[in-house]
Image: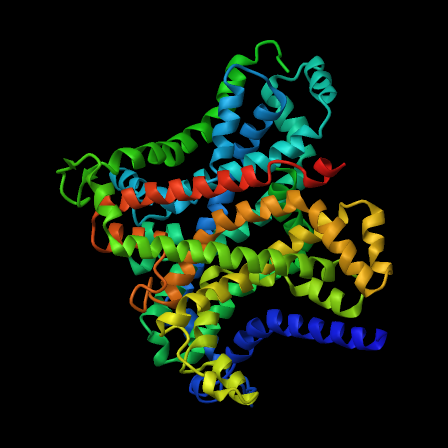
Length: 275
Length: 296
């Protein structure tokens, strides 16, 4: 009975493992097969790796420019988001003032509704600002919609820093602002890392907002370009390039995730378990 | 705490984040309610006030109701699958066997890759052209089950649901795994007991004690099912075949950005917002009390 249970457990484990890793591995293997072999014999292993798929994906399919756009959008968003998010989180964590509850509640409310619901007025607003189909427009929108999570998680980190450090720093002649920059912000570096990695992955992968707000192919981010490539069935001509493109999109997040697994998991559960 | 001379500092530090948030999140949210009472193509400067007309048309629009139905089906089917699967897999990843360690090293990858990638992978898995799923069925002698999964109205929504569950299961497992770890040690010791006692213990002790996690999981499902937007757009071209996979958000997108009925699209958004709120509040009400405390 016990061995039977153990075999059953191992079988379930095997199926789970294959079910999760299998599809991803299949994409990676297919990306180095000659294009015509992908629809012809989808299960087979490549006889000799067709690395040329990657060069083709980068050049002709527009994945190269998408990669650059995605990188710029993600990094620029983080560069704005982290400082201003930390400033707001700090004030909301360590200071009490009139309207505190309202401001905090306003930020938290942003986590409770699907962002795509405001897409029509958001598009109109951005059009009036001449920000449709521009990276800076997308970046400002990304910053705004990443703020609730950032303020929430960083607020938690500031909460755990003792107030006495502020008093001591101000006693030493620091102002409110220099206390923040010199004393408090360095103490929450782990929090900045958690938010930066987690938000960075989300921004790199973001599709819905970018699909609406970017309208010309040269400005597409990777997910939009990739979806476009699939939907127009351009891969019919070159399957290898499409699968190489899929790997190009996945590789950075898989790498970041493998390196910082604990931090990502911490961020994933932060919202859920404390809330 | 209040500190001397904090006023300008507080204001100055809140201003950058506050202004961006106000302009790009809160203002469009308010505008949504306003816009939904107009008939407007978005291109012309002419906005015609039509009051509740959009909502009356919505109520009589069969495609809208199809999209509501499909969205609710996705929430219920994916919610049940993710919570059941999450509890099960949550137990697995907390163990210290070889398979548990192997699964722990990969189970969150689907969540980390872009939904667009997930959609494309599943599109090919289910397509008649490459069709790994069809191949697999033939290999195990179920060749008669073969079909164009995403091309037939009976199975297309199921295909989208499968892709979503594959994508999100790792996160729910992580959620339940941390929940299980936080339970008192005596509960986890149940693992030492044999089969039937273990199962009994699970149903009467562990499962009720997981209520706060279940509550979070359900609310997350409601908010996250919007993630199926990317899946539906890529896997079934935003609602094919014959609206069988149309969801509220894809219909919103179609009305707003494909046929330029901005007012109408916004009324879909408002309706969608109400549905999300209603379900979330119902869930919070349903799980409002600790069932284990009530028993004590």
